[in-house]
Image: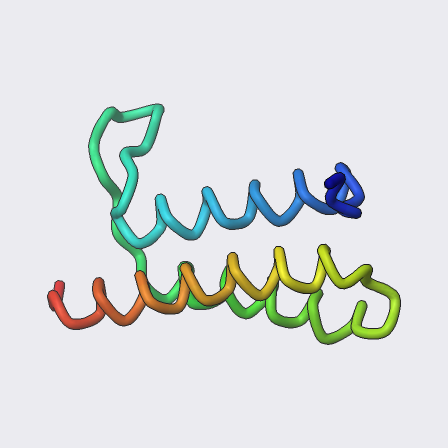
Length: 87
């Protein structure tokens, strides 16, 4: 079965997801080799993906909708996990 996901959209969402994971300190900054943590910026990035999902509602294929929803769920769970760890 072939998924109906526009590759440009997938690349955009995956790029934002990678940025948010780095901003939460879940992955290392490739420039420094160390994790950076800025939860305010991570929240902003997650909010951008949610805004895109809302603005595109009705134009996404069911696969695209599930894909974005899955990315948002993963990011939100990671955000809560990191928020519980403090600074």
